[in-house]
Amino acid sequence: MTRNVVMTIAGSDSGGGAGIQADLKTFQELGAFGTSAITAITSQNTLGVHDVYPVGVKNVVSQIKAILDDFPVGAIKTGMLFSAEIIHDVADTLKDYDQPPLVIDPVMIAKGGASLLLNEAVHTLKTELLPLATIITPNIPEAEVLTGLTIVSDNDVENAARKLITMGAKAVVLKGGHRDTKSYAEDLFLTANGERFIMRSERIHTKDTHGTGCTFSAAIAARLAQGFTASDAVIDAKYFIQAAIANGQQLGAGHGPTNHWAYRELSEKTRKEVIIIE
Image (tube, rainbow, N blue to C red):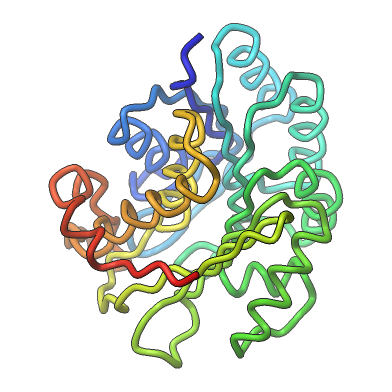
């Protein structure tokens, strides 16, 4: 049985830089076969999200079941889930199957500031979906919402990651790109078994950062489906997103998309730009 099929459960981005579109591009670039369940349709471009049209919960569940009933899915990632009802039914549906590794990207706010998760859905995400996570990949603002902690210092990052572990996640990647007090970015990886390292990279000054979280978590899911360990999947995903950000396509007047094919061309160079600190 192939372990090379990945499913993304997320929203559609008409601009192609984030959501389902970014996930499928990432899967393809890493040699994985992508499948999808769409939770919402957004009208957006590099300037922001203009409209959000949620998909009916029954249809979301139907899409998930159609894939899991037929395809040998090696990993699943979730992105924009939007409502408490969708999160609840997604979690319940996944529990009915021999669940492959699950990567949760707790999408809450778009680059332009639009809310992509209803306030009442946060509790459901924390209590019903997070405990199923193989890896959860919050940025600083998302981790603050999930943990109720203020994250400023390195100790704050550690404490937030540990709290997410106590909430049920088997592993956490707490992304540090929002901390602008350093000339470099640091992402903390921590597991329930105590494995820990930091991925440090030079901060890239660019406006082409739309879809970074989607792309990073999709790369993790692709590598997990291919049999990578959690730590190796996270490190390779970091290489992937580093190349994608550093080689943006300069599209649109706002936050442009990353470059999903850059890793294929520049993987060896990118590996030298990321330092793993154990």
